Length: 142
Image 1 (cartoon, rainbow, N blue to C red):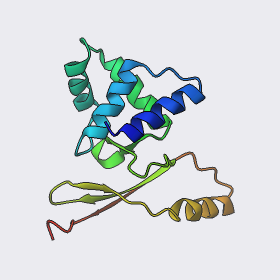
Image 2: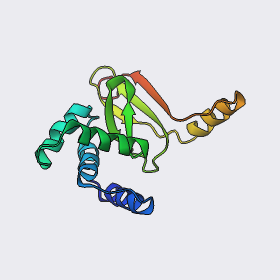
Image 3: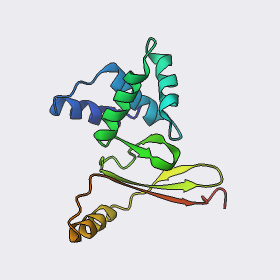
Image 4: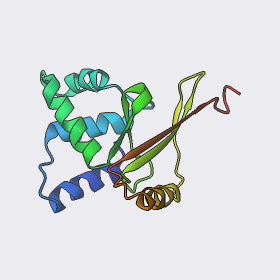
């Protein structure tokens, strides 16, 4: 796993008095090291290779923990998870998804969260999270 992500995760847990358990560490590691977004059952399968017979709730709780803490993103249309590549663990995410090869790239339009906040504030809407998925054809497939 990227040492920087592991250190941020460890420091975050210590600072906020969360347990940095082996399943949480391994789930984050599995997601961080994957070249593509992973579905929950794929994470569970990989977790089984490094932990002794993990039960599905163990994996799901770890996934939910990191997702709620904004270390990973859920790609809604794929029902899959990927590491937050931006490193600033924002509450929203933007992805470009290639319709041909399935490649997923996290977009870093850092002004977008402020635009969304301004727009929702105008109508007194409190945003809890947001996810934007842009479907198209990547440079490799174009």
